Length: 75
Image 1 (cartoon, one colour):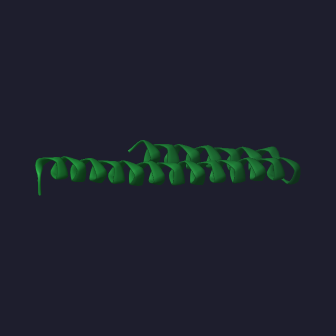
Image 2 (cartoon, rainbow, N blue to C red):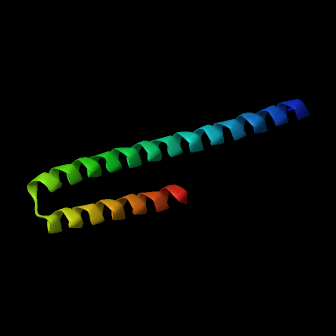
Image 3 (spheres, rainbow, N blue to C red):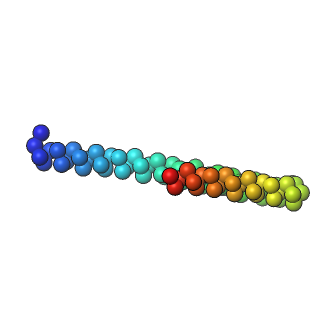
């Protein structure tokens, strides 16, 4: 393989790796957004259906899950 061929191969591999990383990041962001939306929906439901104590507990769980996802996302 010529030097030009080797450089081209390295660049296409680099692009493929970046595309894979970007795709994974988009999937993680979409999953986080979906979970956050579900949590917000649950908070709204629980606000109507449960006591303030139950609502506070659900809200805390929602924030804990969001923080955990954020840590995974940042790794």
